[in-house]
Image (cartoon, rainbow, N blue to C red; front, side, top):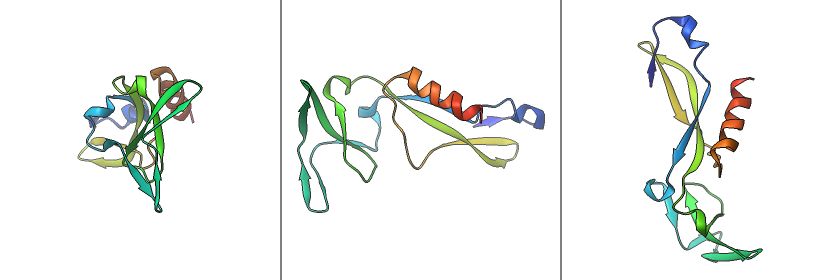
Length: 116
């Protein structure tokens, strides 16, 4: 949360921030067997010589992450809400979380959204 009592300062606040996440420290992140609509997906797959691990971050779809990236940070976006409580502008995570492999990619998306 950020506090700004002057309304002119609100326009200077970014609409979107980039957040670094270590997935294995996130409570919503899980690795391992997943069954969707009665179909069990393999825990690891190899594509182009790279190993990918079946992961889930509270989503309702199947996702794989490069095995070598499991202990590296990934990036997501935090959005400013229009809600103001006692002069505080609140930021929250999107319900449709988008994960970026690099900070540069996440920042490019944030910049695009901030300039809209």
